[in-house]
Length: 347
Ligand SMILES: [Zn+2]
Image 1 (cartoon, protein in one colour):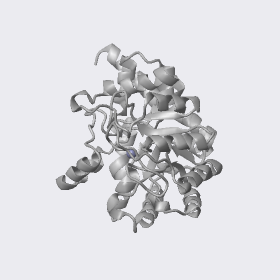
Image 2 (image 1 turned 60 degrees about the horizontal axis):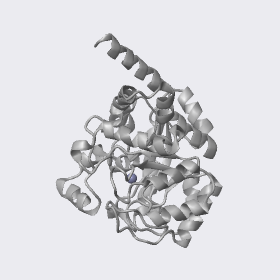
Image 3 (image 1 turned 90 degrees about the vertical axis):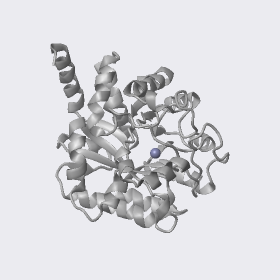
Image 4 (image 1 turned 135 degrees about the vertical axis):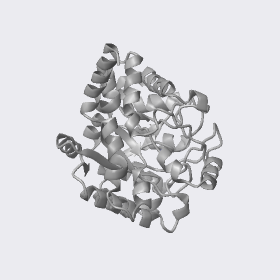
């Protein structure tokens, strides 16, 4: 390693020492699927989290189609139960419900986990269940995945053709109740009309935990420049997704990931962009070929970025930000500061 490379690595060490925040990780699906094993967090995930300097993670409750509708609530509760059981087995993680708890966890060198929900199918049409999940630690809710549910409709993985209607009455009640309780409202995946409805119904900062800019990948699952500006005006944060940076596998690179960061910054400033990696290659690898083909037909084929595929690769992003002349102050906001501000304001 040259002296210059060594100094860059030291700079990355410093920037990662306090822990970076990734606000979307599909961890709970896997904990549930591995429910007959123990210490899954420590054996399967901790080494990568440590290599990447991960400090805070949003871990999502997500229900696959095959469990819906009957098993949605049951599987969601089991996912949360698995998380609690796993966290009990190690000193290295803490499930956090407030900004102060995140700070305490970090001070004790624990990785802070925030429970999120991607699609409210587990709630059916029952707001009381939202309260129950809140008690269990749910602190961020995205109303839909790519499908329709009792709250609204998701944006599809095509440039047009998502359902035109916005939130249902239940969806509206749910959004109001989230804002009242202190649950972050996540606009990831919602269709364009649903996005607009949520903006109209709320007044606190809104976030998009994991998405990409339609400028580079024009699908309704991603967000437009107009939507990015709205999140900015509302004081929110856009988390940049690592699996949909480009429709073309050849240009799905870390450079393109950074292009998305720069694009959000250009529209709304440095205080409005964060990380929502959505690393799910490991889940993909576990699927039989036939299921992968089925998912590709129903949704899309994700284009994983070779050197940004799991949490151990997080340093590659920081190295690229340094190479592209971001200052330490800017990198610190992207990797951590902006999300922590949201947690402080809303939790
Ligand atoms: Zn997602």
